Structures are given as C-alpha cells and as structure tokens.
Image (cartoon, rainbow, N blue to C red; front, top):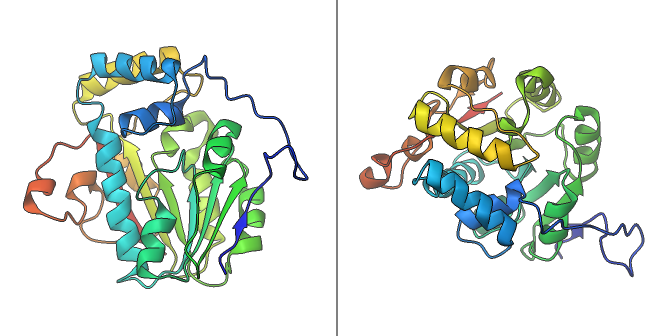
Length: 276
C-alpha cells in the first residue's frame, strides 16, 4: 500500500498549524498554476499573471514547456536510467504530469519526496497529491536553502546510499546570487550516491533578453519572492563535475523532444540533466 507523509494542516490532526492562504496577495506558485491553466489561483494571482503577459505576451509558454520538459526528464530517468528515487524540491502546486505520476507510470514502486517551504503551496498540495498503489509519495515542509534539513528529511524516506534524482524545476531563480545557489546545489549533490542525477530548469536572461528582463521586473514589483534570471553559462555551473545527458544544457523544448515540431518551439528557459 502506498503511503503519504504530511506535516498536517488538518485541524483534527496532530501538528496542525493554521495556514493563511493570503488570497489577496499574488503568490508565485498560484501565478504559475494560472499560467499552466490550473484552477488553484485567485484574483490577485490572475492579475499578476496578466501583468506579466502584458510585458511578455508569450508568458504562458515557458511554464507549459517546462512542464513538458519535466515529464520527458522523469520518463528518461525512471525508464532508460532506471532511477526509482526522486527528490523534487520546490514543486509548487501539483498539476497533471507531476514527478510522481510520471515516474510511477513507468516504475510503479518509485519513491518520490516533494519538498517546499511554502505553507500556501503545502495547503493546496495536501489535497491534490495521491500516490499509486505500490509506490510512495511524501510532501515535506523544508527550505531548499537549509541543506542539512533537506538531506536529513530526505533520508527518512529515501535510501541515500542508492542513486537519487534531484529535481530542481523552475525553482533556483528564487534564490539570489547573494545566497549562492551554486553552493546549495553542490552541497546536495555531494551527499547523494554515485549514479545520482540532477534535473534543472531555469528562466533565461540571454534569450529574448529585453522581453524577459521586462517581464521579470514587472513580476518583481508584484511578488514578494524575487526572480533572478540566469544565462546558459550560469545554468551550466549547476552541473559542474557531472556528466551531462545529451543534448546538454539547451532550451527546454530542445531537450529530447517528442517531435521535430516540439523541438522548433521558442524556449526562454534553459534545462538539462546530469549524472554524478
């Protein structure tokens, strides 16, 4: 039987802490959900998303292309690479095609641990995530910046002596250079077994640079969590010491596309997969 691990948000369960969803303020995860066509968002989130769309009318495309990239990466890992353990940090509000649903469709006994430090995301996610009958899915309240806690919590659910796929999909842009996201990723990778993988996607500052800068500036005026765009070269730094899975760090539609048409789509996010 699959199990699910939660820090409870149910008032009738131990560990309950009331969650203020702050529906009058735009929230990055709900803005992203709106751009994906989801329903777990409110008027303030939709207004922020529409402001981003005015700055860049193609703003709906990157989240959807990123979700498609995540699916292809997880299918590769669970299938061709034989990975059965996944640590997905900063997953946001669950939607169709999340890591556990893709992985467990290929490897039914796959173990997937989601981590996020956001009580708003957690409150939404608790009612939306469900595991398959043989695998296991957990959702834990942990901040990516607290690497010691991330690894300690992951070790409760995963066997860190065996390969793990570390998934950082569209999350590192919320860590500014001053907090050294490169060191954070390196610290996590150092603790994982040989044969482990890293998956990263990240919005670009060197593709449609002016449009992307305008969009980021507009969102940073509206959102508490600030966005830092990065170049292809900077995204490659996250993979130092790893063997890049072909085709390397590319625009996300170009990473092992399902069709030539998909590969030709405009992409404003860099993505890649590497193995330790």
